[in-house]
Length: 147
Image (cartoon, rainbow, N blue to C red; front, side, top):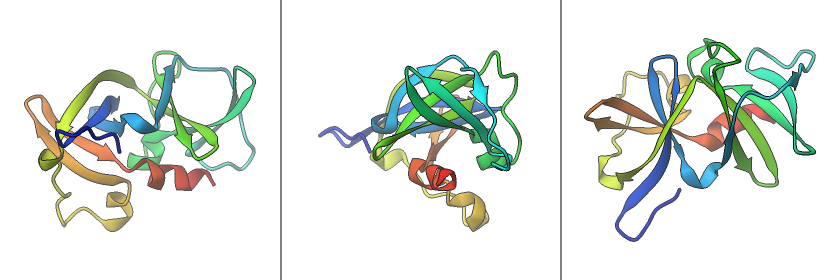
């Protein structure tokens, strides 16, 4: 979690469908346009394949399939967020990318209790913003599916 002394967390705002998500900035390595991918046999619906990122082989996951059981939209207009997981980089396919924002830690609320555990495990909380709700993604829980 990227937090400064003022009790703020920095997140990259991304979108999957109409949902706005916050990815902790300290986990984001870079954001790229879609890369040519090689499918992985029997990888599951959430594993799109592997890509060559400047000589590194990176697993590409569909964040929409993981979080909402629906694929991200058009591969050509979407983006790939490269996140760091220990020594490995993993790509997350998203529909759009927004700004980096600072969120007061006190603004991050727990998810409502009616959200099923199998869905809630991918989120650290939710923030109410002027432009709508922002779900804070638990990147470690998402990346656990890649291993």
